[in-house]
Amino acid sequence: MKTNLFFFLVFFVLIAGCSGKGSKSSNNGASCTTSSNCSIGYICQSGQCVAQSTNSCTSNAQCQNGQVCQNGSCVVSSNSIPLAPTNLQATAGNNQVSLSWDASSGATSYNIYEEATFGGPYSKVNSTASVSNIITGLTNGDTYYFVVTAVNANGESGYSNEANASPNNPPLAPTNLVAIGSNNQVNLTWTASTDATSYNIYHSHIFGGPYSKFANTPGTLYFDTGLTDSTTYYYVVTAVNKYGESGYSNQASATPATTVTYPVGRSPRGIAIDVSDNVWVTNQRDNTVTELNTNGITVGTFTVDTSPEAIAIDQSGNLLVRSNLMAVVSKLNSFGVTIGTYAVNSGFGGIAIDSLGNIWIANSSANTVQKLNGSGITIGTFTVGGWPCGIAIDNSDNVWIANWYDNTLSKLSLAGVTIGTYSLGGIPNSYPTGIAIDQSGNIWVTNWGGGAVIKLSSSGVLIGTYAVINTTNGIAIDAFGNVWITTYSSIVAELNPSGAIIGEYYVGQGTVGIAIDKLGNVWVTNYNDNTITKIVGIAKGPQYFPYTGPQYPSGGNFY
Image (cartoon, rainbow, N blue to C red):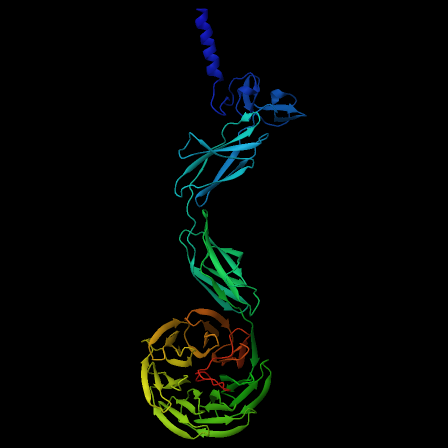
């Protein structure tokens, strides 16, 4: 009988003293004899476990399990294992989970346990001396459960709270990043990435980087302001969500610009630049031509016939000015003195000069193109489409005419023989206006009503139609093949050779004529403001023309 009682007591003691990791404790209010019988955070008072309300103490009895009273405060006993860590947090990433927790007093390191099942059992996967750790090599989409223990020379604590996370992929990189330069800023747009919550924006002054992050935005549009004008900025964008950051988007670049406005006469329209980079402007309502130097200072104002519009400069530096109401072309020398007046057909239209110095005039009212020799004598009149306006000459001396009413281009030989008539892609009410020819011989045409710029090959085959804005007017091409367009909406648009918009610059009201000087300044006339605007140093000057020589014709503007 005594033997049985002995084994019963031993079994009872083993059962009472046996517990799992971190489970030697009692609930609040449970019976106790010492604090070691209570849960962490509780002390034994009057035979019951109660929450420890203060860290102050006068005896060990006032401290929780594993602590002793030293100098009036409860501290971890040097002979005790540390308390379990608290506040374990798990944050998912791409094939990884980041863990963090609150430090345990007396701990010298921490063991990290992981399991794919809620509640364990757990397997140790790492050990660290810090209070954070990144578990890598995980499978995206799976859920992982973690606990942490605190360790010192006396042993290992119980488990912390459990935390879980499911690693996943970050979003894909954004696409179609476009950078558009403007006045002292660059406007960025891109295509959204699925599951992205925001986007990081990076820039560099060097093509290809390295890039520096400077902004984060939730949307797909960003205005980078306060930039240095005439400086090129290179951009990439990344997509971000809770799982991480994507790779870079495509790179896009743009160059902001300063604009300066100068007064001229009333209703300025045509504009041309001579070999000295002097700017010549026709003032329709004043019946004058204004000459400005490259700094915008007026050099002189010269009277011409009524309602001057189109303007070109010949190989000798003489000005040729089309006066709409008087059906004449006035010829002025480089000092602004009129040295000839030549009768032409009625209407308005552009002026171009071929490599032999012949003058070609588009006559809108007569549906003809008129050819004059250098002395102003008419040597041919040729029928083209309805209401011819813009005119340009390619490097083979073929003459190209934009026919406003017909929505076509006419191509004539130097002898005036029609080589072809080409449709502009069936855009209704497009009203082709300005015309210019690039370094590859492609033809670019603005459309007053079509909201686009059209590009054709030298054979008249349609290459592309590129949206710009309604009421596109004048057109010029710089030395790098970028295409510059004036619009009546007070915006000058810059397109790259592929037709993508890379710049939009705000100028005056009613912008029509355009020309580019050798310094890369873009000059435009503002019909409604009685001003011209210089976009400073933004283009790759000088303006391109299909044949070389000391000549700066109007580049297809009929204004």
